[in-house]
Image 1 (cartoon, rainbow, N blue to C red):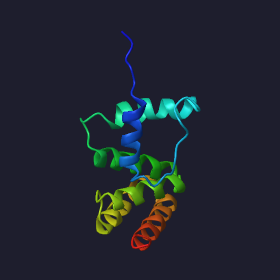
Image 2: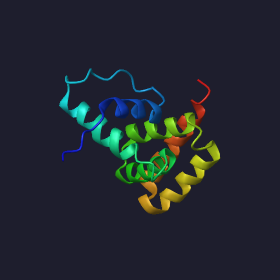
Image 3: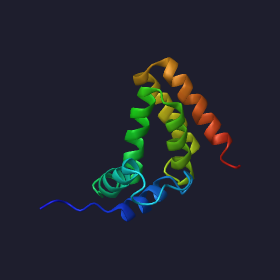
Image 4: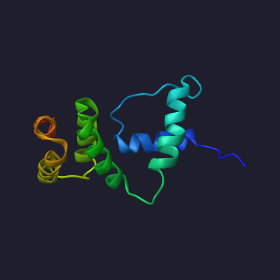
Length: 123
């Protein structure tokens, strides 16, 4: 039996994970890529209650920091702060810890993004 994926459930979780900050997505059926992402990544993986959203976000922040993707890192940190998953002090501790594993060039970018995110929190 083929598993039926739920795009609507995925969309709800996408909005929850990113606090509705990433804008409108195309309607169902207009982008196979977006439909697949919502159905599988959010409707299945992020929806699995084995790990919390915060747990998944911490894993994702580590992976993104290792890759050095500043744009996605800023999105994740902003959402973690906005959702109350991380405090500014925890974000700084996370950056210090990850720097030891991702290296100082990527770690310094991570610190910059953490500081920018915290500074922009009240805006």
